[in-house]
Length: 181
Image (cartoon, rainbow, N blue to C red):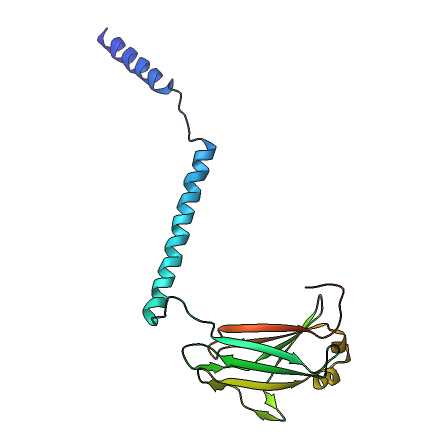
């Protein structure tokens, strides 16, 4: 009799345990929890990366633009040469790498590294703060290299540091276009 009561007791208790209705997490709350965890992890890695950068060199809170870039054309449409002027407005001296000239069509881009003028190479260039550098870019040499380049409507010059950091870029339209891109 005792054995049947014990077995009956365990069976009833097990039925009570399995008979409970379990309520799982709601979908909206679960999404918010996952989103919060992801945002916390992203912010942790971003701030950690900024701390490592700040330990290497202390920079002022509001840093001025390091370089200002100007491009002038010799004629309004279909120019033969461009005049590139780079001025160091930053607080430190910088080493400039070779400027990158990008002739841009809507779907095609041609990139050229500018080494210097008249078979003289003077890049990388050390530019002190407050000083400027001017480079004449003769576009006819590029047009002789490839005749299709004359139809490209846009020219862009990108300036990089010797370490590979992009300092800035400036673009100019070489001919009239129906589209602004």
